[in-house]
Image (cartoon, rainbow, N blue to C red; front, side):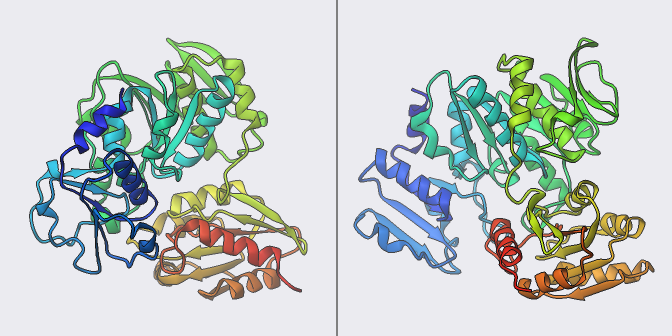
Length: 461
């Protein structure tokens, strides 16, 4: 069994699980199920509010607080959760000690995996692929950064299961294995607080294809500023399947003004009109659809089935999500927007944006592209939130551009929603598309989005 490969790595090891969120708890349960008496250490900077759930386990030790990462070298295996940052460790740890669920899972099941990564679009693309495969073939699972730990699906996998894995840069950072089918959607500046440099972030993302063989498949964005150059510089040899919204290609997929065209050996074999994808609007979603279609073709799904299930796919929560028309205003929740390119895509998709909510936790991203865009495409009312909001306002003024007609600096979302209701013209839209992370105020972007939606839907005149 493929699972035995994972168990062989874990067996007879002195293991520390670093980070005890959803994936850390999953790792603990998996190991404890197969090795009931194995001594385990769990390390996390934060106090563990659910520590009492494990007090019956006499073979587990907890290390919490600021010193949680000070003695990791005494372990044979450091099973790292994705969000853990080791930038502040001031001693050397051999690379072979690091491991993750993603690496162990890809080691064992990589030949069954369609892996999806990219700065933006990976959740939509992964979910779309899963939607198509689960309806067309039945035997498919969705796992990874979408919110389902890899170890949690192992018992549901057989030799014929197609595994769709959303893979973040954090999950790919420490892996020496790649999936059989890899999808690389785009590369923009993000997570610089974790990776320190954009180059480090790009290298982590490239691990989705770095360890593929010449018989594996890489589906990639031909238009991206960085991906083709990285493919060339890494001297990769595998089966390349590009997609483009700007260039007519001989293989893969490309866009015209009215449709997506799929092509192989310069022969067009399928056409998908734009009007058939109303549930996932916006030109940025063309790339997600092209990548998903090409991935499903590797699984021998018919063109007819793919197009049918693309048309029945519903967009994801917090991705340019229509909240509702309340008091004559259309409200949209795009809380997933954590980079300027995502906010620009939302502004290009949502009609008649009269109020825009921008900002949050500052990770050092360059916002000039967004400031320039808003100068060329002004929004009448703008809310600047958090440290990013402060920086955007300062850089906006430094650029010499006229400020929005109405703007406020505000961190309280109840007051932000009040501002939106008071200032957004009837029949126009209010868009939450922050172009920034949420960690200054919220656990994650989903909590930010739900807070916004609740305030909008329960707003009193």
